Length: 375
Image (cartoon, rainbow, N blue to C red; front, top):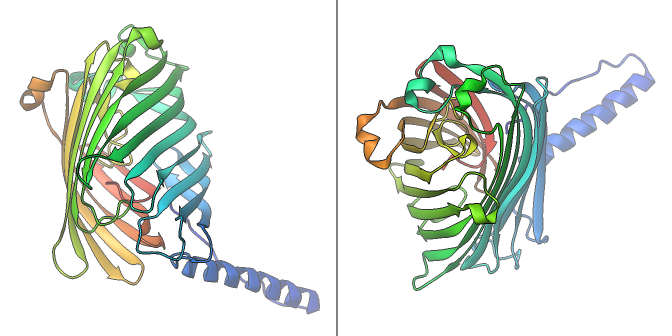
């Protein structure tokens, strides 16, 4: 999420207006001071939390208003050399009737990070678009249909270090409810239920040598995530999924980082439409409408240059390639989608960035405002 703060001034005409101007100026000064000091760790508090709010704009939701509370905390707040836990609470509402609120973050049970819970819980109601399933249907602009989507999402993983300091393993739980309403072209759903509930259980393996989880400057990250959604735990659509992610972060020249992300998600069985693999959105192939391209499998590759410019300001530029396909072995038989973009970074808290990204794909573009890097 990105915030615009508009300073203003009231011209004094009498003593009352002078008092009002002084009061308003004091408030503006406090806001400016607050933002200027937001990236300075407060070693006197176990929870160092900052608030950022204001208008935002995206192609999907149009003009809206949002607020985020970003917090960092440690068992020993004075020891800033240790990796701290992070928690983000957010809410946003737009003129289209879109609204979303949620909480996400990572909690470390010890300052070394050997045991951690990664969580993401959200609910949103949004006007959305759908083009069907599979590349052939997705690329046809005439298939575009508008509908209203209700989406509740719970994602929790508990992982702990095993064998090696940088190797982690643990259980993973996902619960997702999706309800498509006011549909104008129901044939695009291929006979599937318009509302589905999925609860899946599985495990996650990670190998992580990054110097900092939320804004990496060096190191590598690998994850393998295997999930199962069988009928006997309440699923109407029984399926499983495998998700693999590999990332590297390499210093280039002064203030520059080259970040690479290779990601693939494959599903097997009777995958419901809302749980299909997809490209696009806030984190993958930015600029494409999230879900415009979806199928049982999807893969994407992004290389991004991150350049620190001055003090708390930075910029990024990236190029990406993604593809959706119906079977794992059909990756090389599909038609790839290309993606390029650039963005601005502002350090809201210590090594926690606010990002503004502008991405472009074939016939599509989008602006994204968010907390933390895309990967």
